[in-house]
Amino acid sequence: MAAVRSMGYAIVNATDLDAWYEYGTNIVGLQVAERTESRIRFRMDQKAYRLEINKAEEDRITHIGWEVAGAQELEELAAAVSALGYDVQRPDAAEIADRCVVDMVRFTDPDGTVTLELHYALHDSLDRFASPLGHVFVTGTGGAGHVFQLVKDVKAYETLYFDTLGFRLSDWIDMKGLKLTFTHCNPRHHSYAFGGGVEGLPQAIGHLMFEVEDIDHVGRAHDKVLNGEAQLINSLGRHTNDKMISFYMNSPSNFGVEFGTGGLLIDDETWTPTWYTDTKYWGHSDMVKLAADDPKNFG
Ligand SMILES: [Fe+2]
Image 1 (tube, rainbow, N blue to C red):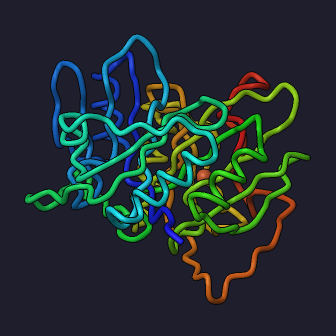
Image 2 (tube, rainbow, N blue to C red):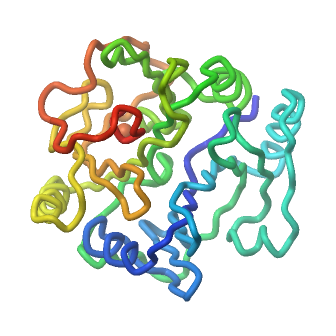
């Protein structure tokens, strides 16, 4: 059965491109691939880009790109998603070329929170990746990172991600009574995590996670955030399930960014899901009092 291989990219609408330039380069350590009046494209590895920020009147994540292996997988998944009742569209050739992929289809996710783009063959750059801070991002078969989303219709997300897009269960965390489900589509412990179905919770992407190889780079970014260069949401800590040492900060578009190192790799031959009663072994303390319904409170 065809299945998503990894997170290819994320696309964001942002009111302040200058803030994103500063944040992306000086805290996350991303390389600028393109900067115009209307957008910034950031690289984190050999791919042409992994994060695109578009100038807009709003701040939100608009698209998540899920990479598949090729044309046949794209057609199979497009047909399966369409059979579920989603309106699956194929953008025109100019838009597909602009995304730097060979082909893609897209549809709106169950809650209408974000547009999902199934694509293949995200271009490799001809230029060697060079982080302005010397960061080496953990990508490759694990893709760009992971997404955590608060959802309304949990069943619809289970049906879409598990039964249709081919994600497999990693584990669950019971977070103060909220069941969070972690899923993988490659050796990265989770590429997509979600929770919700509870009255009063918002529907939004809570955070994106980017991983680097060197804990000193995580520590230096944490220092900059402690120094006020971005808003610290959760202090440095270690997750129970993927064992990642990370911290959470606010992005210039008011969604969380988890920045960490040492994430667990798993394989489907041997992996057995479990559940945890907390998200962390230590740390990840709440450093800011967010509104109870702020999506950045979760995950
Ligand atoms: Fe995370």
